[in-house]
Length: 595
Image 1 (cartoon, helix red, strand yellow):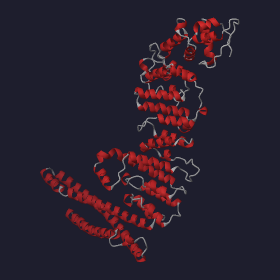
Image 2 (cartoon, one colour; image 1 turned 120 degrees about the vertical axis):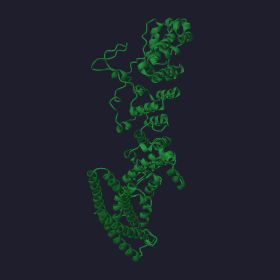
Image 3 (cartoon, helix red, strand yellow; image 1 turned 90 degrees about the vertical axis):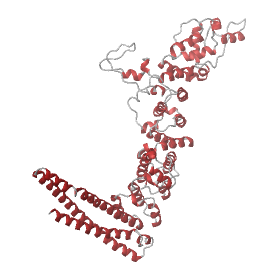
Image 4 (cartoon, one colour; image 1 turned 135 degrees about the vertical axis):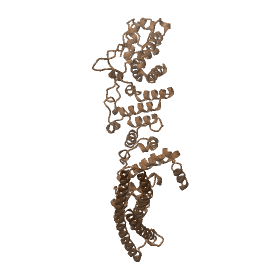
């Protein structure tokens, strides 16, 4: 753009124009042409500076003061060319107005983007950021700043609170620690990095910084918005419009930068959002460092994740499985490293002997074990899932992390159902990761009738199922014996007391004893019937096992030897039969003594 101006007004205010005009001036010609290709702020800033040289009164605002300050510095409009020159005028406005206002500081900082090298050289960017950080670290209610969130919170049907302090009846809500998130999210990524760095130097709490970074990610990463909905408060349009749109942003650079800005402390960012960032990193093919860092962050708080979070789709064309198993395996490895997985039986024993000292790591391990069992059951039907990967993921957690192996048994059963072509040896190797001791009665009942399990595993399940039933029955008998011991001395005490008391008390005491004896008789009859039923089942099982032993089935000799659990089961049956006869005699004696 060409400007037709007089030489003397420009030379009286600008040192640069004075030197340029003096170099090319011709005594014979009053017209000279000066080229200014790199004026900060462009033609708009130079036009305002030229008007100032002509004595036109300028209206400074947060939209034009930054470009004017840079243009004045470029044109050398110092105090040497007149008092109250443009440099002093704009600098005074910045100090007195812009840096003292939250809203104006943001507007001025956004205008610095068009003249960023000059604004940084003049410390305008630094002073705007320092002003913003100082106010972000301070409770806005102390100063009554007109923040957008606070204005909305101060409105009520009964009135409002004016900014001059007059209360008209409204009850303002408490200000949130992240009330400035939406304003900061309107800044470009390079300036946002500078703001976060300044906040870390200032000592702002890491959870607040993490909240600001994730708010920025939700605003400018479209893939994250589709998975995680905004709240109504977050959907409010920013008061500072920005020409930056998601389509114009390099999403990969944005994701990698935001990940590097997140604090490393555990629990500051929800696992759901971290998994969302990891999915985007896979889609955008982010750097290996970025994906590895996200995996470590997720592994540090894996107990907070859900099954839906772990179901990461496989975005690679070279892998046949539906879900990304390898990523989940790496996340689990990070979790085990951070939680100190024990490596030897001695360490497990010491862990059990000191539950008070180790309790903080027990609960996360149990939660992760339940989560991984559910994940294995979800991915098990995938026909392309290799046995080695499934087994490695199932054996990743220590044994003590699972109280019951029902979830693991369900996952193994689903895998065997979807991979019916596995050999007997592969089935046995897969079932070794399951502990039959830790199956519930319901799971044992299902496993005993499961045709997909190897024969060796079925026999083991049957044996442990019988042991559990015998243990339960023995416990019931012990409880009954303790009840008899505690109730027998009560009758003489009641009788003696009744002799000292009245005849009515004597009758009531005997009635109570008779009711207790009758109830015990009913319980013993039920228990006797249950024992008879179990003995019949044990006899039938003994016959079946003897038939199997005569057939010499390979792989079963260890279960059929005399030192195996089968002989133990027979001994348990015989011992309980003898115990039952003794108890019948005791009940008979008790019944006749009562009569």
